[in-house]
Length: 563
Image (tube, rainbow, N blue to C red; front, side):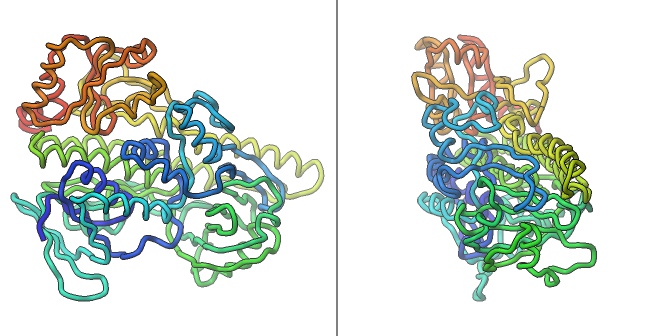
């Protein structure tokens, strides 16, 4: 079989890459060894930025409709045991509140929780839903494009490349005749044990399996069903429940908000997953007995902060867990993966369609590897913050000593939870300020604060959210490049921009906006928006069109010989 892009791995990263290529009519073949979507809970937090990407492709509403019931609080709560003292609670809007906010153009609507009304300037708040529910949607969306072929139940066993292309040797997962897939480019989205990364001889660097009291070492996830657990807990519902005590720590996640749950516990040194009595452990975390039906259990290891030394070589690229491995605090692993492939997808399409030189692809690592280092470092800090938190026996004591101990621990947990979950800066503040395909502007770089986002239209930044004529500005951008023109765009200037775009063979939508507030937010009369909704350039009316477009498509890098 022959194609333009081979994608190895059909998790969220591989599927979203297929969607980004499919919407641009780029032939691609996705290889995924599992014929069926996952049936065990994995990632459970979709960031605002990922929801914006799903909105770009037209299915954020479908994702938002999944998960917990519409008015179920997506709170995070900390307790001694889940049925005992509540220590701290961080309030997060329900998906119904988030949907109403989106319908209002991203303005505060309904219960803003502890997010605040202005802290998250986006039409798409974060969403809590299990990856096992998201993947079927991504599969359907990818398969709907005629240029996308999903080869499920097929496993890549070898990858080779030369100057002309890449070849993958593929075997059916259930046995059968091996076959060859030839492509111009190949992207490894095949997880932490990536065959593709190993074929490149690329190693991970960073911290591996750090030891902590929690989220450090061997973990066990227990997926179960219970009809009486909420009654046993006896508290206002939450999305995440944390048991923080000196005897049995645990993290409980509500899967459907009705009867299915995921419990994560850490094994003691020398303990094996088979040694864990799932029922007794669940009862110890909650502090009461309740009906318990085991669905499945899965061991895993926490404590990783790893980033690949390179994110590609030649015609082969790495994305997702193949390029970076997180401890799950902050919930950024899967979301960083989506950002990877959205960045890479439009660049591959532009090169394959002849709208950009191959030098454009060198910018993928230059832009995305710093973000992987940034996000894994944040996850590590949050893992240290909660994983090394000590809870003395006095937090469960009666009397004044217990009251004071719980109050002090609650204050510390309140600081932690706001640091981990109120992160608009981390999710919306992705900036490629040092990218060679982004126009440089003088002046100090903005502070990168995970807990605070300041809308900035510096080139390299995510285009700030605005509502214009009652419509979300993002929704007016084109599929590929967009020239945002504030005020009237003279015919000669329009022709100049379209002339360069036609010469390069690149898609360009011209969007005229007459809105003073948006003009002030973007800080220029003309703004060039990339397909991933990052700003490539901004300048004045009548500015030369060729220079910013040449830079944004990698032509300047080609002339210089290398990025």
